[in-house]
Structures are given as C-alpha cells and as structure tokens.
Length: 74
Image (tube, rainbow, N blue to C red; front, side, top):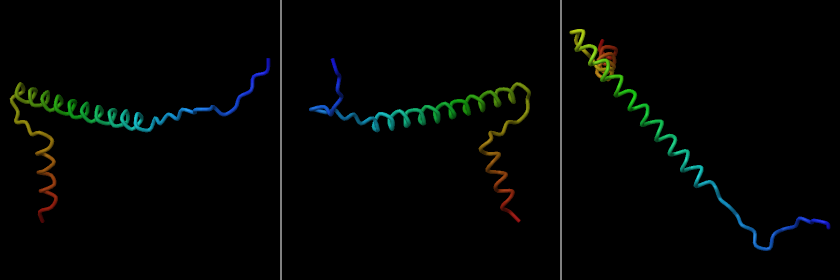
C-alpha cells in the first residue's frame, strides 16, 4: 500500500491569534493585580510596624511627592 499526501478537499483553517492575545492580556492583568496587591500588603505591614514601634509613618507615595516638590523649589 502506498500512502500519498495531498491537499485536503475541505481544509480547516484555525486562527489562534485571538486566543493568544486573550491569554497575553490575562497574564498582564494578573501580573498587574499581583503587583498592586503586594504593594498594598507591604504598605500595610510597614504602617503596622511603625505604629508598633511608635514612629511616624510616611507612605512611599507621599514621600515621593515631597521629594519631587523639594527638588523643584529653588
């Protein structure tokens, strides 16, 4: 028996671009939410430790704003 491979009568074309775009977007979204969750937990731990130690706590965002303001003033 001789097997020959030729073009199919009714070829099926599969487009996986939508699926790969969806999975890429999902991974990016999951990564973003994980990063935000870790940042929120870190700030909560830092503020709790500052309260325990009895020292004032500045969150990193306000500290960054003050540093930018300090650098812009003459």
